[in-house]
Image 1 (tube, rainbow, N blue to C red):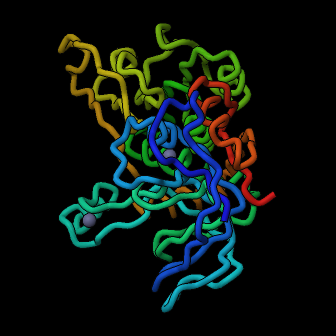
Image 2 (image 1 turned 90 degrees about the vertical axis):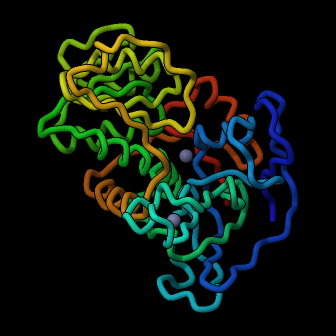
Image 3 (image 1 turned 180 degrees about the vertical axis):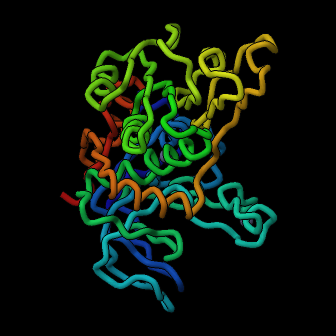
Length: 333
Ligand SMILES: [Zn+2]
Ligand SMILES: [Zn+2]
């Protein structure tokens, strides 16, 4: 099969992914094989390719927002049948036995494996996965529009869920990429007001189009006090801006997998019982709940597509905030 393979991490400007012919995987017992139609491009892929994350497997095929159709079943598969359309997200496998799994926090599993990091992902024509970690895609979504739901959407949903927003709340979003453009739709559907902080003129325009109550830059003060804020941009200084913007006992949620150092701050910024928390990965329950909610809204994703072999270009554009909405690789064209 054809795949974009990372042999060695390097700055994305040097095009570290190479188009290669690699053996098509065979599904083991309990696994399904998916013929990939498309795969979303995520900031985490950028951190993988550039080596900001520790890479447990090299070479690796990145990609963890996979949409495709099941073309082969391993022994004993019970949930799915051949021909069904499924999505594969970041959470690839958990042990089910560690203290976190037993406490309903499998997103923090001590032995969790992630798609495109520990296990080859969707920048390829085929992917295999344990059937318990794949999800049927609601029929109202096209393949391309479904791809960003699988990480941007699911992680966005978890961040939203953990941000303790009261009814008819006021939510701030810092950064307006793939995740935020989905979260704003969930939040508005549920009756909240959304305030968007971003520098990019294109992102500001998209935020306005999606119904933001106000759009400004992080240095500006929103015209109303916020109940909660979610930071999607990986800039530590935003933590201070967001804490300044939320009310007493407000929650600031950090959605990224990496962030530049958070500057020193006065205690007064977090006093008054403000809550600062990060979000790590997703649990299967997030995936199921989010897909059901996204279908009900229904969430409309903006996608910018690239052929598989232009994965380096897609990552480059993502790095330089040149994507409106989400980038998606077309694999089966
Ligand atoms: Zn576990
Ligand atoms: Zn991701």
